[in-house]
Length: 464
Image 1 (tube, one colour):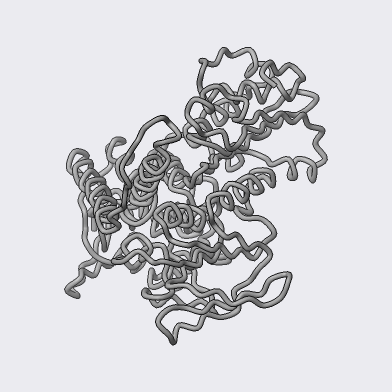
Image 2: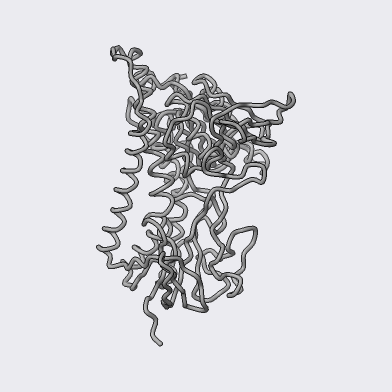
């Protein structure tokens, strides 16, 4: 029997919908199975709506500090419900944009939950319980992930919440405890603190944003404390008592046990892959530590079956999923794409100050035995940062001492998430430190801090 589709994609997040569109561009007949809104978590409950919330918080902060810029504003207040509604509107608009792209590229949206039923076969069950079986030469799994739950921190959606509930709370809490200080944790900590909530971050490891360079972590902790966020590192939540009106959070710290009272606790301790009920075991698909095993082109051990995004190795980031989807589809089409370089993936955190990084940290370089040159340029020395009133932070760059190879960059400050792409491209093109120094950067900009940091690494910095 002829296949109904050339390609079926299960999941419509930034991995799934990008893979589908690229496949359509390459001449394939494509269907996408999605049980919820098109765009997945990223567009509907992650990347996009959270940035809308953060922008509202930033605008509110600007208004509160308008006097610092010579502007007099009457006392301002935030309408929490309106802020949430704006965020949801942005998300809905983006999801409708994916619908438009599907129509433009003649991609079928098959609404329902997909389960593998043999080679090239997928059973799709709609919300009303009706099932249909569709066939395809190739099937890509792009089912993403959800909030991970700890046994002592069960999410009930009311007093102990995950990121989805944190985006649509009906009432702004007066006090909040955020457990975990990865990107999700610190972004929500910044948002709620800026909106007026008393926020405490509890982090098990010695530094917040623990995947970042240590100097970046220390700078963010300093900035957060200055803004009124209580930061508790090397601390662990032992239990949460939700029997009263609020929550009593028992925390083990280096100084002993402490009880913190809050209206709500946000669990931001990582993610868990969505692999349940997909029929993987029945097909014998190899899964290791909750991730589907694939080769460099995202082929599983089952012919015609592929996996991308959060459910495979690598960082669980939207832009990684999109890149994987394109590589996977181009390989299916008989092209010869280059495997993804996972050491040249930018990471961005959108709290204030922002964080952006790529490549190796200074600690990793030393552990690898690399002889390095490190340059650092503080935004306190930047004319643009001073003019903008955003002097917190710095740019730090790392080069191989012998050959000048650009090993990594770590930034914290205003708009650094817009600056990191320069380093990604530079590393992709095997640019050296001296080439960065000699590339003329516009003045005054925040981005010239990259050039200045490179110059600092080689003892040629002008503005320090």
